[in-house]
Amino acid sequence: MRVTVPFERPRTMQELVLDELRRRILVGDLRPGEPIRPDQVGAELRVSRVPVREALKILEGEGQVRYRAHHGYVLAELRREDLLEIYRIRRLLEDEAAREALPRLGPAELATMRASCDEMESFGAADVAAMAVANRRFHLTLLEASGMPHLLHHIRLLWNASDHYRSMYYLDEGHRAEVHEDHRRILAAARGGDVEGLISLLDAHRDRAIAGLAPALEEGVTDA
Image (tube, rainbow, N blue to C red):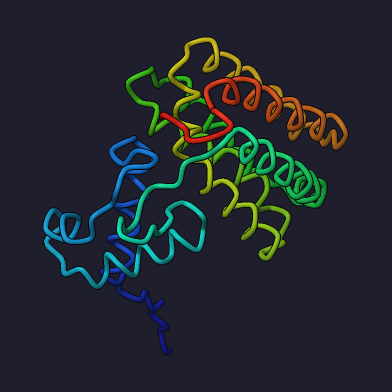
């Protein structure tokens, strides 16, 4: 009997650098408006400038970094109006994905969502980056059940565009408590198959995030 061994493609240097840049953005090591120097990043990661520049090009395509003439790459600054637009589009796309996902949610997905809730509640203010990762897992586990890869691609891009600001939200103890409560309610609606209740809870959850983040963002350049 012939045994087929699953093939796993080795990760490229570009992918490794991209993951590290995403981590630095999430934890605040890279700040909005500050330059990202490929030579310096390459030296810190002990790689050439080529994979660093390739990774920055991907982040530029996602809107996370911008290229400025004579300045190079900088982490994108988010204005209040940008945040409102991002969350408005997220509402349209995520509500559609959630409607399609709910009938397809199985025990494995619900267990992952529950574990993400538990994980988030175990973190404090010093673990906002880990909390952001668990939060993303909670929501995308639900949305990925929709089986709509093209829609999910755009949803992920919108999440990426505001990841570094979302981490700021978790610094406030009151915000963290709201998130935990919202997630438990969302999970209960998902378990019960309550489509309209789930959509209403997701909308309210995003609205609270907007209310918490918007005052910290100026209409012009943001001081993060």
